[in-house]
Structures are given as structure tokens and as C-alpha cells.
Length: 375
Ligand SMILES: [Zn+2]
Image (cartoon, rainbow, N blue to C red; front, side, top):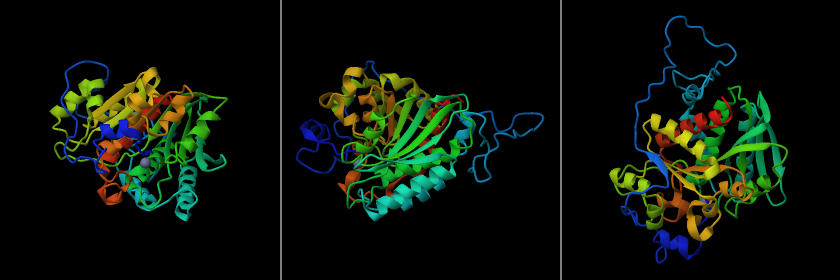
């Protein structure tokens, strides 16, 4: 995630006089009830009826999961729900451990991470291109849709990070997540084309994703999912910052957070209005796992207004919004939750991350992407 700049953003975070985010709930504050955002607290029990269907046990032959497809007993490629069960968070953790070292653009480790993106996508069955746009290199994996190949669903994550910080949450977590989702979705026959991308130079100002979005032609983008910081959670009470202006804009979420005792263990999704339905799909899947999820939908007027909700628009989804394309950001709320964001207060290392939280992000996103891709 890009650094928050300007007094508006810093003030929201209580950072004007101090470089560390406050340890308590910050300006979270209760808010009056109202509307404007969608969310629900339900933690419905997950009763996907896929594992033990009665009678004959004829395994589907064309969509059988790979032998190493993860631990879930219901794992399969026949439905979004079955694909969720193929997520193997151990693989995610291994990739995070590899990626989480200083890797500013042009460095040796930056190149290794770029290569790992390419290799992971190729192994998952994607056709891989490296998009050299002058100052940097995006890795673009593409898997043609079976029925509507000119319609594209995209999942991206930036692989660069600022110099001198390991960037485990920001954004080794997202890159590793995109690779794991790609591995799982590579097993499915998706009607629409799926692109999974590793963006470069996000921290410099969204340069990689912008180069891609500006040159995206010849196909219809259904939606772009962005992973940026998906690995940190805390179940400690009052560990989530939810600044006053956000509480006013999204009062239902503020109420939920109060009821949740300020715990920083929910999934956040920021969408523009044209991507809201995909965000709600993701939320429904996450809450089927018992994982609270908050969707914040920005209006057309809000999404590119730095002074209004710029703190919610600090990652690669903005490059798509700039082109009028639907996009959403799936994350752990970044600086509103994680003291080691950009190594402000402690190093951003893999040992601080929460594998169970990330697993739920990956499962819910896998299902949402599969649905968006027409499965
Ligand atoms: Zn960042």
C-alpha cells in the first residue's frame, strides 16, 4: 500500500505528531445508525453440501483436482465453493517467507520475486508475459476463458516494496495470495478469461498497474480484484482503528466494530459502485466461513477524490478506477490495523502475520473470482 500523504490522511490516523499509529481504537468511535454501506455480521455455519453427496460416488473426471490440491476434503473444481476448499495456506506461508525481504525495484531480490511470480503462474497453467513499461516490469499471467474469452476477470498484487523493509504484509502477503488463488483456479474451466498479475512500482505511485490499465484494450474487464496487505489480524479488543470520517461515512460498519469490541480480525473490501456486487459476493463467502467482512463502496464522486476518501484509495485498484473500470481492494485495512506498516513501528515480517486470516481471504476471493469468471 502506498504511503499516506498529506495532513488529511495523517490526521485521520492520529499521525500528525507521532509516526506510530495509536495502540487503542483510535478515532474509531461509535457512530449513529444510518446507511450507505453494506455489511452483515452473520457468521453462518458453513454447510456446503459438496463433500458427501449420497448414493453413487462418481468422481468428475474432467475437473478433478490436482493430487496436491490442498487439504480440504471437499476440494474440487466443479463449483466456487468446492474450489475454496482447495486453498492451501501452507503454500501461501512458504511464498510469503520467500518474498519477505527488502526488494526495491531493480534489486536482486526484486528480480527473484518477479521470477517467482512468473514461475508460479506458469506452473498453474497460465500463459505468462512480462510487461516492460519503461521504468518497471509487470508479470501478467493469462488463462483463456472457455466460453467468453474476450471478457476478463483480473486478480493482481504488487510485488515491489520500499527499500529496507521486508514487506511481509505489504505485499508479500498479496503476491503469495494471488499465486495460491491462481494455482487453485488453474484447475477450473472458467468461462471468462482470468488474468493474474504481479504489479511493479506500486509504492512509487501505482506505476505498474497504471501502465497496464492504460493499455488495456480489446477486451471487456468484468472486474479487477486487488490484494494489497491481506495477512495481518488481531483479536485483541480495540486493536482496529476506524477513523471518525470513515465511521461517519460507513456508520453500519462502525456499529459492527463496536459490537465486535474493536477487534481487528475482519476482512475489509473497498469497491467502487460498479464492483460492489463482486464485493458482496466475496463477503457472503467469507461470512460462510465465519469471518466478519466489511464492504465499503465508494461513489463515482468519492473514489478519485483524494480529499474525501483518499485513505481508502491507496493501492492498485485506483489505476482501474481512473480508467472507469470496475475494481475492488481486498485487505486487512493496512495502516488502520498494522503497526508495522512500512516498518513504522517494528519490522513488517512474516512472523507477525496470521495464516488463518489469510486462508479465509484466499478462500473467499477464490470463490468470488470463480463466480465473476462465470463458474
Ligand atoms: Zn505499501
